[in-house]
Length: 411
Image (cartoon, rainbow, N blue to C red; front, top):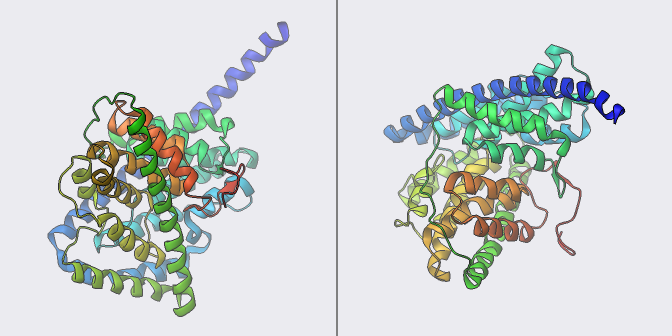
């Protein structure tokens, strides 16, 4: 008993130290998220009021591609570097990653590329966390936890979901393993990151709250069937991005020209379809889906195509918000097939496709509860769990480690 009591002061000191460090990471990542979100709002508004900007997408892609090719260095590896360094702990995550990915993503959205926000937030949070570690001369052994805190702070700050951000940081680096040693750093950074982002005036999307849904065996089966489709769609997305990257590397030797090709394809697709619904974040498609408003049955496939071309060609931006759109619109389409409430299945798809593509089912389901309320918690978890299993081990994060296989025979 005496030995245990003697350990209390050291535990309290360690807890206080990590709370302060993680809060600092949260302030840095939340501040960066606020700047990013406000810049993104400006870019989106400007693009919508000036549609002709779409024709500048190839040139904008070349500029971003050239800057990364000439000055990016390790920062060009993006989120893959961040997650890889959680495991390897060798290379620094350079500070220049923050301004490069912020500017590159805003430019992508300004000119109509189909991309998201999460990758940018994660990269900014991690690079700022690693810079803080170097400035304070903290031991390298503490670096993985600070990087995970940066991931959580960035995620919580950009989406306004601190619980999901906290669990995402613990869950994302490995398939089948939660980093409980990062529990306090991720929790503090996510909460502070979200608070900082809100305090600095960043706005987040508000979605309809799901009504309470009673336990129903048939409905569970239908949601699980939809989960299979969500999981397979996420794998198709991951493979599609990889395939476009491979084609670009094979046929376009000079890297800065690859976004030019991708930009021309996006323009051609937009002119062919006569709509800009699939450019940028496409957040209105989510709102229409969860509200049960009219959405084209193939919207999920079209958003997937636009995003695969954009990101596979080397434009900057995250994958997660497009995955939200793909999932919500796919859920809307499946609701008519399965005879399930549109809002419920669109909300489940929103988080389940994300869960499958990132191998983070817990964080994704919790995000659903934060965004859509607790009325359908069980169904959100079922959709995420089934989608996670049926996506195989494909992931948008190639440096994510497979610690535990999802299921016997899953590759």
